[in-house]
Length: 197
Image (cartoon, rainbow, N blue to C red):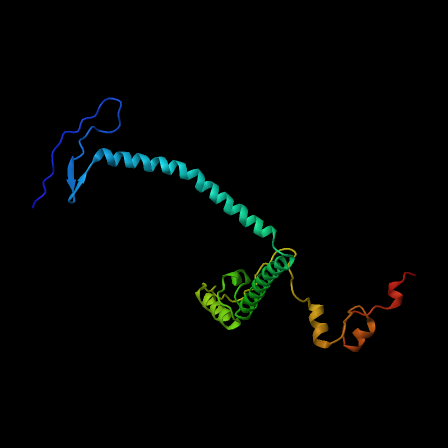
């Protein structure tokens, strides 16, 4: 038995949203399909959805209010336990930050990279610090060169008098007549030549 669709004409009247059809308009998957009845069902479902939306919002508000009420009813012990858990998590984070800093120092990694280290144990953190350090570009090592003309205000090194004092281990006063006589030189001035007659 083959089912063939029954052809009918669908007419719409002005001002109506549903087409005027006969009850048996066509066959869909072996069942009769009535477009008018389907449109009525769709309209009923839309109306139900409009009615249920405010109720859904109201249910959500009631759920939130119930949650707030439960939080307000928490005992003092529960509040203290929640604060304790928060403090423990902050302590753990602080300890991990300190471990990261120590691992960076041990691996000679710049401290700015300490926050980027991954791991939980000191060994894991140190291995990661070495890995990051190996990935950083190396600065070329240049020999220390002293400038030929360092400019004003720069350190000039030792003077000749300072070098002699360092070598001989004593202070040298070239104007001291006794030192000049002992070392065979210098300018010897008599006291008479210093005073005018």
